[in-house]
Image 1 (cartoon, helix red, strand yellow):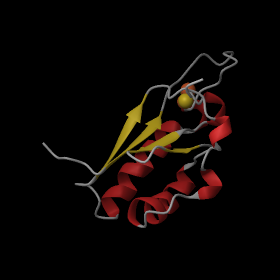
Image 2: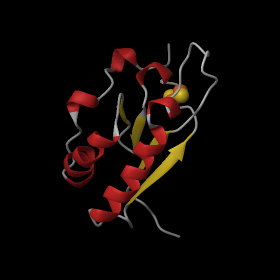
Image 3: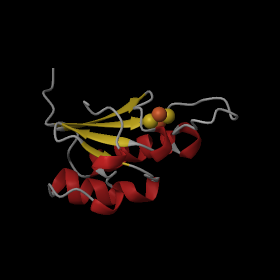
Length: 112
Ligand code: FES
């Protein structure tokens, strides 16, 4: 079994259209996930970075939401057009794409 250096979780969750929480599926989650798979392979990172489709990551208002582990970098409003930059700058270069990083104060799931 491969031991990946990073996992990229892409929310593809879908809800009913009238659900006030919204969802990442309606904001292009599937296309973002597919683009990560394509770009990670193209960058030669297939054996070290694993893109994974994910259910709700509890940052619904920020969708399409992506989180990179182990460094816990959360991206919001990600579109397929942003993926190549994330792969090049972050996954290859180690520098998160700051313009897409969700500010710490806006993240849910913090300890009190
Ligand atoms: S629906 Fe994507 S984070 Fe909740």
